[in-house]
Length: 264
Image (cartoon, rainbow, N blue to C red):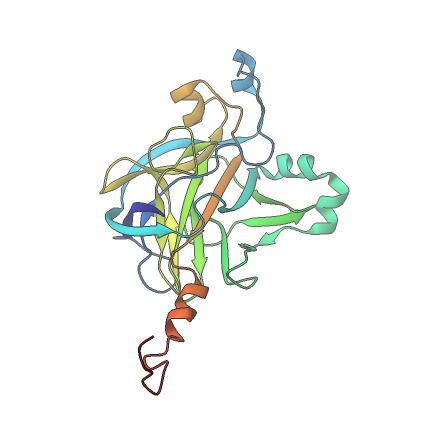
């Protein structure tokens, strides 16, 4: 099995939901759902819409914890597209936008080992309030605003730990490099909420996420690559052993045979 060391987040600031959120094993899908393959040209950085900037340093302490992935090759993947209100309206179409009516919300994940709504995620503002969003044709959209700080939140309403690997603008939120499923992520404890509000700089600090222009984005300033701006990715892993193995062990019989039999 794929055993990973994860970092357990112990927030010194406000955490949404009950209990501390768990571990850091942060790897996310870089270009989930339709990233461009072409190289970034000079004009790409001047294109309109939101991207994510490298913000101020904020305290966020973590420590490592062991976690064995039960589905290492097949994570549950989900994507949030973010942009300004005008940008989201253009992406989904004015008529659809008016009919859908964006509201503050999170987005449920769908998986084989949990029921709909047991795990959900979204984007919250500096006050801990969910940003407005909508779902259109199986795509999830969130409305941001230039200059505003934001955080990614993952709610785990199950009785099991899960690991989530996260990416912002195609970059892993742990190391700031191109995202990949094989990288470590954060663990989310049972019945708790994980809050990730920046690119990790160390075991003690992060650089906060801030909405900004494409030209001022971390992706552009660090790598000169803006092809994946405007997308936040999540890859979720459940913990090994799976439920069927646990149930099998619980049903094991300590006395399977009631009487002795002669040797053959």
